[in-house]
Length: 104
Image (tube, rainbow, N blue to C red; front, top):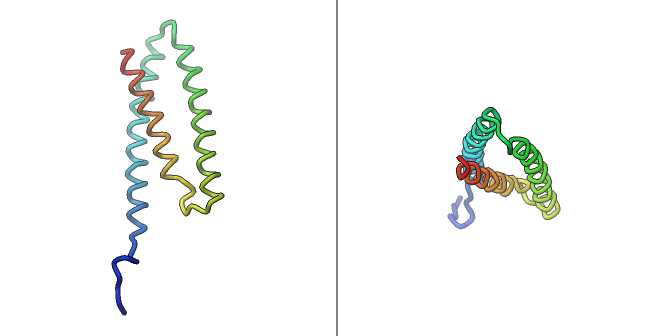
């Protein structure tokens, strides 16, 4: 039995990386949620706009993530593009964090 390092793969490392990215997304999203809730509790003229933006962004991100998964399914990607969807959501959350931090 010979082992060739060129054919040896570690698929569990892909899973571990996705888990780590998911964990980071959860932490980052909680920060943005806290920032938005604080803003809403404080009130002000743009609170309603923030609420509308929050809902529309979530719907747009859901559609974009679904498109990624459908494309991945069509080409037979083993994880249905979950890694790409996680990165997509992390970019959206990071952008919101930056925007909300600038207003503080």
